Structures are given as C-alpha cells and as structure tokens.
Amino acid sequence: MTQVQIFVRRLLLALVLVFPLVLCVNGAQAQSPVKPAVYANVELVISGPATMPLFRKGHGEKFTAVLINRSKKPVAFVPPHRDWAEEIFTTWDATDAKGRYVSRIPQYQIYCIIATMYQRTIFAPTILDPKNPKIIEDKDLLILQPGEQFEFQGIADPSFSLNFPRRGPYQITLGYEFYPEHYVMAPGSKKAALLKNAPSISATSNALALTLN
Image (tube, rainbow, N blue to C red; front, side, top):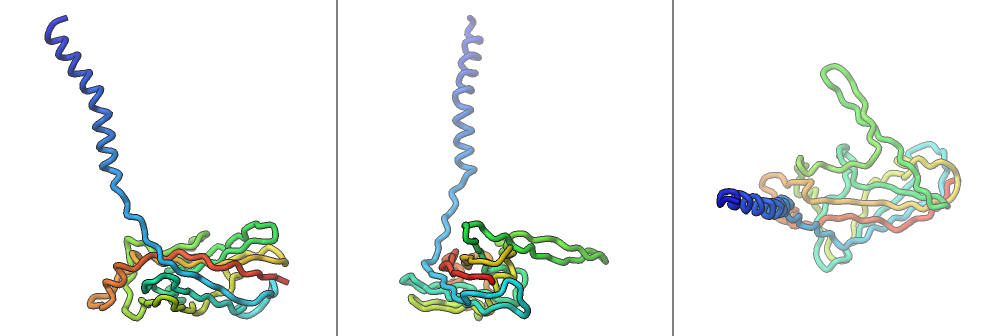
C-alpha cells in the first residue's frame, strides 16, 4: 500500500469518526434551552346553584369565580373582559356521574373576504397569539396582594359552552389562564415593568356539584 493510499484511508477514517460528533454538537446548539415559565401560586374558587333546568330561557344562572393570591408576593394579572371578543380567559369543564367529559359547543367566527361572508368553526378555546400581543392600558393590569382576592365579573353559565347531553348530576370546574407575553403596555405606561415580570397563571377551580333537572 502506497503512502498516498495510507493517507487517504486515514483521512476517511477520521471523517467517519468526527462527522457524527459534529452533528451532535450542532444539534445541541440548535436546541437552545427554553426558559421555564414561572407560575403564580393562586387559587380559583367557584360557587353557584346546586340545580338548574337542562332546558331554560333567559340568560342562564348566576355563577361566581374568585381568584385568591396564595403566594407571599404581589401578583399582577389581566382579569377577564367580556368586551374583548378575541380572547377566551375562562373555560368550563364538566363530567357526568360516570366520569365522562361533556363535549363543548362549537364556537363560530364570522369573517369577510372582499364581498363574501365566511364562517369558521372553533372547537377548542383559544387565547391570544404571543406574536401579536394585545396593547393594554394601566387600568387593565391589576395587582393582587398576598391573601387578597378578586371576583371575576360576568362569568357565563356553563351550558353556554358545554353540550350537556341529559338530566342528572355533574361535576363542573372552571379554568383560568393568564400569560404576560400575550400583552404589551401602551407607551408611557407606569406598569410596564410589572407586566414584564409578572408570573403566568394556570388555575383550575374546585369541583362544583351541579344537577340538571
């Protein structure tokens, strides 16, 4: 075997050994560590009627939801706004006597392209896109001191979003989510730092027994 052949053979062997290592290093660099979200220590408590008709008229029954700060630090958050139609802050869930989840009633979005109206079905709750944060004012960002509580206003009847199939007992819960990266304070805001450093919130309420008759 000539010196040239030996050199080429060693070069190929070196490439075989080094190439997987390069791929591994590049892959590790591509997967940059993601900073884990910090969640606030809060409690969500719901209350409401023990029974209600399966079929009824009007605007539904009255339910209340209270968010309580259980941490030792103030918690900044944006409470639900019913007039912000593009957002869904709170979502109901329910299970029947056999533990089966109640399906959701599809929501519909109407939009127009040129002169034609279209309808799109939304089967799951949606929240704001963090790539297009909503601009909010100082009054929209609230501060909960340790032990302080805030009652959500205008919580909808769960039957408006859940398709209860029959009469009988159910267990209902309410979920609430808040992610500060979905918002940005208006220019000149005095609360910009509070929003930037605010923890996320992902809370599920106590289970409430509800019988449909």
